[in-house]
Structures are given as structure tokens and as C-alpha cells.
Length: 384
Image 1 (cartoon, rainbow, N blue to C red):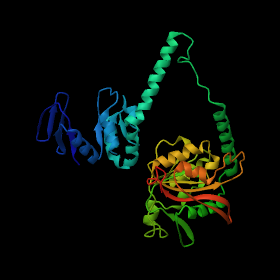
Image 2: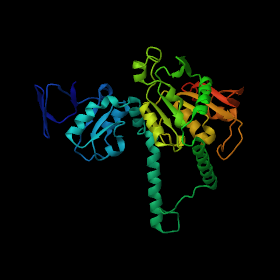
Image 3: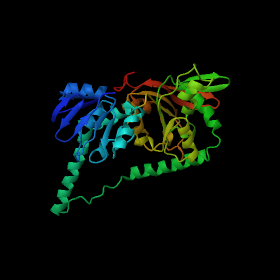
Image 4: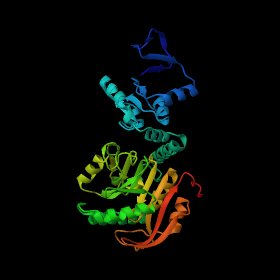
């Protein structure tokens, strides 16, 4: 593999030996490509396996590493300065303290997901960071008002959460306690799993039965399961190892892509261990806290009733532009465990689609449901 060095400031390059004022580099795989224009730099970075940024300078930002991430290319940097903020260690690149760290990082670049790296890089777009700068200037202005001493709010002012938001938070906490009590030890989730397989049919997920075993064929798609609980449907989609070695799956189904389950409920530790063993990343966070979605599909089934801010969740889903598979109950009774009730019109308006709904009276499902598979890349403006 070639180590390509770009930029200015060299004294000479001959026979694989690069000499600069600061250092000398020598090697058979070394290639010096000199100064690159903007377009050529973009092309070189996008095609690279990784970009080294081993600066000794206390970098205040480091545009090179951010440009690389926007291209979906991992970055290998030193472990100080702005890199502590701009590089997520082990996710968008590796921050290194020693030469051995750089060597080990180079060996592991193929473990990083270019889609996630690209998404993280997008947070430095001007349309995103402008609001962070706006807050900084607003805070600075409040500091100025405080120094004036004329009775204005100043830096010490604490904005009180509106009563309605306090009530929402309390309702959500009650709902989470109800949910946790309902799952209990999670030792027997059979009834819920039977219902989930019925949800899957309405969500247009392919269900295959072989040797009496039911499993899901995701056709290689990666999935974010929102509120998947301790027994996500993803557990019924085979891993790459199972597809390669198990007589049940081998040659019959494609393994799922890199998938995640998020749920704020506290489950026994073995639940997380089972997800890990099944090559599923479990994140103990609320759906409202989702910052980016890099998976191919989003699944949400029998979840929205339990959330604190269902509108925020649905808007995040819509803006993702991903494939959405959904099954949510409509016109339900409001209880401590289910503080929300929805209509078809409510969900349609937020997602910008004309979704399907149906009254179901086939055990174990009873009620009116909003369901289906939707390509949100086609309807960001409300069009199917």
C-alpha cells in the first residue's frame, strides 16, 4: 500500500527519500504528490484508505481531517487540540499518542463505517455550525449585560423549563417505569415476540420459515430499531457468520448490515450481552436524543405511545430520508404507561405521507394500526 504525502515545504524527494526542514521520511512505498488543488485534493482524500494528520501543532480546528471525514475517509490523528472534539475515537478515526498507536490504528481502519464518518463530517457544514456560533455570541452578549450591572438578565440568568415541559418529562418517567415493570426480568418475551412477527408482516419485512424456524431476510440492509426493547425483531435476522456456516440460513438469505437497537428502558445486563453476541449494537438512549441516522432502514413498532416527544422523533425520521417500516397503534386509551394517543392524520402530517391504516381483529392483534413501508427519500416535501 502506498503512503502518499501531499503539501509544500519539502527540500528534496529522490529514490523514495523525502527531506524537509522538520523531518526525513524514507521508504519503498513512499510517494510524494506535492501541492494539490482543491478538486485534486478532494479526489485524493476520497480515494484514500485513511488520512494521517499527525501534527505536533496544537491544532485549533484542522480542516484537513474534517474534509476527510466529509469524504467518508477515516482519519488518524494525534490526541490533543481540536482533534479531541472533531474525531470520535474508534468511530470516525483514531486518535493516537504513540507510534505504536498509529500502527495499530492503520491496521483497523477497515472496521470503521464510511457512512457514519460522512454523517459526522456533515455536522461541520456552515448551516449546522452557524447556530453554535449564534449561541456563543448570544452568551457573550449576556456576559456584557451582566457586566453593565443595570439589572438585565446577565450570564447568571437561568431559563426555567415551562410547566408543560416539566409535565411531559414527568409523564415520560412514569411511562418508562411502567415499561420497565412490564418487561420485568425479560426472561419470557414469547408473547411479545409472537406479536412482533405479526407487526413484521404489516411492515413488509420478508419472513422465511425453514426447518420450523422463522427468520427475517433483510437483503443485506442495515437497520436502526427505535425502541426495540429486549427482544428486537433484529434478533431474528441472521448474522454474517450464521449465513456462511448454518445449514438453516446458508445460501438462502443475506445477512443483515450493521444494525442498532436504541431504547431508554433499563434491562438486565444479559440483554445487552445477547445483542452484542448477535452483532447488534444496543444503545441505552431515548429516541429523542438521536443525532444522526446512517442505517439503510428505520423500524419503529408499538413505541410512540411510550415516548416523551413523539413529534420530534417522527420529524427526525422524516428528515433522515431513509426507508421507514412502521407499525403503531391509533386511537388508544391514554394511561400512565401510554401517555399519548395518535390519529392517522397526525402521523401523516408529520411524516409527509399518506400512510396506510386498518382495523385489525386477528389475535393476537386487536385495534386500529398505522403500518407499512415508506421510502422517505421520495417524500421529504410530503409526496409519495
